[in-house]
Length: 269
Image (cartoon, rainbow, N blue to C red; front, top):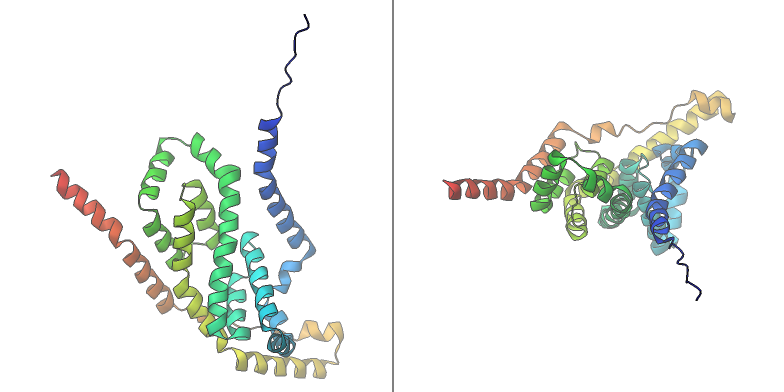
């Protein structure tokens, strides 16, 4: 009688590859973009020098332009590239804040969700399983009030967007809570910066005029362009008062957590 030999299934190895592949793709793509210097095009110089061309294209292809903008924004957030603020301001500048703000909110939420899912699938769950008691306790406490904490982290601009995305994956925030907290939490900041961007049209036009005049005076060419700076100071848009206002909104989001803890303490007495 011939015995049947069992062949070990490669499913575990295949699952491991499938789990890590999206993260590898993101890391490689981001590395390629930085190595090629493509991230430098995410600047107000690029937007400003092509301002009229972009406005003309948007006027003739509004839906297509919005789709391109949303796609680029999703990629910027998912790949954790610098330039999200410039993209937000540019959305308000090019589309007006009435269209720019909603498009940016949707795009930022989609991009953050992509990164969250990839991080949670690849290393978030593994780290949670291997975490010590301290991390496990923090994870349980965070999940208990996940929506309030997510709103706080999104509302207060002190916390980097990408760090919040990765932390939420490690701390086991449910997908629905993560999406809802991100979507609602970024509305105030995104709207504020979109409105600010919508008012930069005259600043862009003035900077374009002075830049072209400088190029003409310097004789044109690459050497002249190096001598003629092109800069839009966006740091003035992020004022202490604006940060304080967002911080106050973040504290409001934590009120349910404080009330829950206060009630539990009183019930235990």
